[in-house]
Image 1 (cartoon, rainbow, N blue to C red):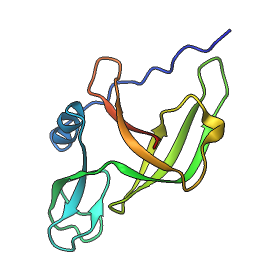
Image 2 (image 1 turned 45 degrees about the horizontal axis):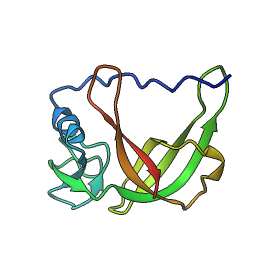
Image 3 (image 1 turned 120 degrees about the horizontal axis):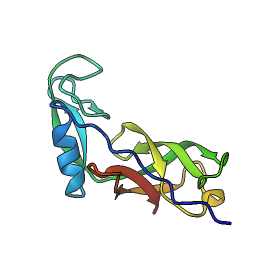
Image 4 (image 1 turned 45 degrees about the vertical axis):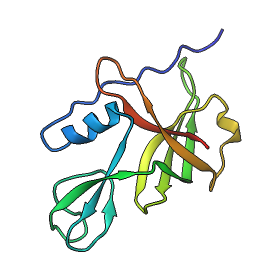
Amino acid sequence: MSAEPRKIPAPQPNVENQRFFDAAAEGKLLIGQCDACGQPHYYPRALCPFCLAESRWVESAGKGAIYSLSTMRRGAGAPYTLAWVTLDEGPAVLTNIATEDHDSLKIGQRVRVQFTPTEGGPPVPMFAPD
């Protein structure tokens, strides 16, 4: 008996993050870039979490490395892996790893963004082995 594919609930975009989800629908990953201190950050928001100056949206290459991971196998659903991925631009992203082979994932493994459909909403960024 195989597990049903995991369903991803639709995010609820708001005024501050609508641009992020619009870009995701176009296959682009946006991160924040501070205009004052220059620090890149994720999750993009209007104010920099480091110095509270205004931030702008910049496109990420969508590549990085797994920093930490945990695979969930309980229940009747399909297993899934949550991970912290450090983007090449610097910010860390808490994300899902899109793979069927959860046992082959490793700390330091290179991954790239992919956009996964949700239940009736915009796609969400997940990462897959590179």
